[in-house]
Image 1 (tube, rainbow, N blue to C red):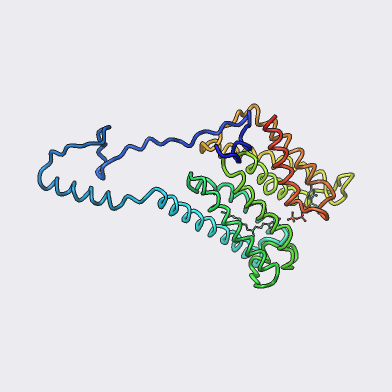
Image 2 (image 1 turned 45 degrees about the horizontal axis):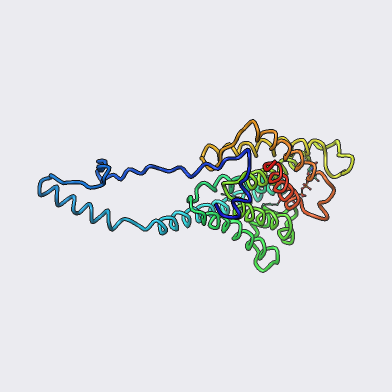
Length: 308
Ligand SMILES: Nc1ccn([C@@H]2O[C@H](COP(=O)(O)OP(=O)(O)OP(=O)(O)O)[C@@H](O)[C@H]2O)c(=O)n1
Ligand SMILES: C/C(=C\CO)CCC[C@H](C)CCC[C@H](C)CCCC(C)C
């Protein structure tokens, strides 16, 4: 276990399940199981012997070194997820251009879906420890995309329309840029084995995103210490942040990446959701963007609470 993982995984409530040791049974091309000692004696006709020799040469040539297979696997996953990211932005740009969605709602849905779909995509990558860097390449590309558009070095109107409130490219340099930075951080530092990244992204994407949508529509009763936020928005943040966190943790548990003592993890995630909701409700957006404060506080609290 590396130093980093030993720091991150002393959790009493979380037991890392060793990667599923798939008992690969070597099969001949015709799917006849080999003898356990892996030596086989042929008693076939000349034609059969020629076919077996051809098959063996084929099998030998087609054996790709494991690290090359891993590279091909992760490059393919990266291209797929990157394509998904571009398709997501393109879709919401199209919906906004056709006035099916207003720009504000489009932005929030991109905020909610980007991070959550990114989380859902992590198991597509290989089981190697380097896979996280391939996954992190996707938010890195989008970070650079947001940067060059935010600085008006290029002008991707589709991106600007679907990701900004008012169509000002400079908006890309704040919330959206911090957002993809947090996605990179969670992928590289926490990845699939730790609930910290999963819960942090669930709160930033699922919780904060829904708080905005509900709060703008039903947030007539404001929070006493912050007249820009409402009880409806904050309650929505808590509920959806908690539900999305548990849903994602179950998803990763069902895929065997982590194992949880659910009786222990549920109250802990509920507490983290309350803390994240309080942080999001504070009048601190002018000082520190929610896309930084909410995930960073969630990381700290999740790390602390899962270790005690
Ligand atoms: N707890 C909350 C959160 C949001 N809102 C509503 O949603 C709007 C936007 O919320 P905010 O979190 O400030 O979103 P932004 O930071 O502006 O957008 P983004 O996070 O995408 O940068 C607020 O003005 C408010 O009307 C609310 O009522 N209650
Ligand atoms: C509007 C946003 C934040 C402001 O609060 C979100 C900006 C999102 C980026 C433009 C696109 C990010 C894409 C993800 C890195 C990867 C998504 C992959 C998935 C398969 C769609």
